[in-house]
Image (cartoon, rainbow, N blue to C red; front, side):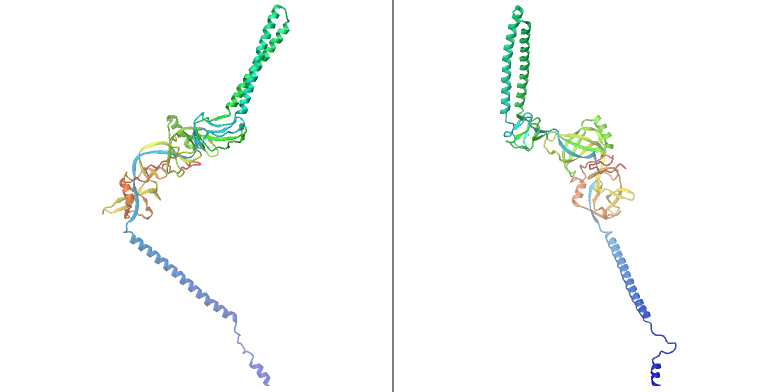
Length: 442
């Protein structure tokens, strides 16, 4: 049968299996994974090799720099008298300030001052139209004269009726009526005199005078306006010489200030600018407030400055340095030279090794007080030793250095050191609302 032979020829042999597509795909994925894993391992190896190369280069560069001097800037440690300050934020306030108002109403006449000029107490600065008040004064005087004439006539009538009564011609009631009339006119005269005085006072208030010595501000009302009594602010006069500054200190510093104030009524107070760099004026502490602000935990104090050069201006913000004591023979270094490490505070001191080379070494220090650009040390380098103020981050013990020419000259005394004149703050805590960066005595 040819048909059967054909059909048998296409049937699979007994025991044979057909190929499975899933196994072929798994083999491909396995190969891809191997390739990716190999690539990843190659990348990791290259990163590791580059890192090792970088570390080796850094080590070689560090080794190469060991023998190369590092440039630094230095300044000498000093031993000198140094005042110790308490610092706080202050606001300049006029010693006396007057807001001028009119005590009578009327038309404001041309002013008699130039805005910003100095005025003296009692000097006329403004005037209100006095004509209505002059007329009222004349009227009061006329009423007084009229009542005085009536009183004179009543006195004459009373004298006549009294004589007639004593002669028995008239009754006692008529005499007493004339006496009462005389008393009424006397009372009217007293009232008229008070009216005259009031009219004179009203007329005098038309001339506005400066109540204090000070500087007059910008006028608040132009001439020609009709002003009301005791309602309109005309101008403000502030006293500049002297001038006051109100400032605050933490409550834990108040006792030592009061003790100092009890023994010395002339405690020096210095006013510095907003940056706490430039000294503006020197004054003295006047008084402390009689209570502590519970919301801020600070005490309010008042200082007075002569302000002859008018370097202080009302509402100006200033930094106040209150001199608490003057420490003699204090060891002073710039604050920039103080470094911190595991063993505490230290400075880099420039010294000479056995070979005569200029090297840096670590000098432990004990900080007493610090504020701003200078620091007082209880212990540290010898006076005159050069301490590093710039370039310390590249130093190691024994590192060769070269000192900057300018700062080197300053270290030898040719130029003033940056730390000179820096204020110091006594330990006592953070000043609320003011600059009080300090290091407590360690």
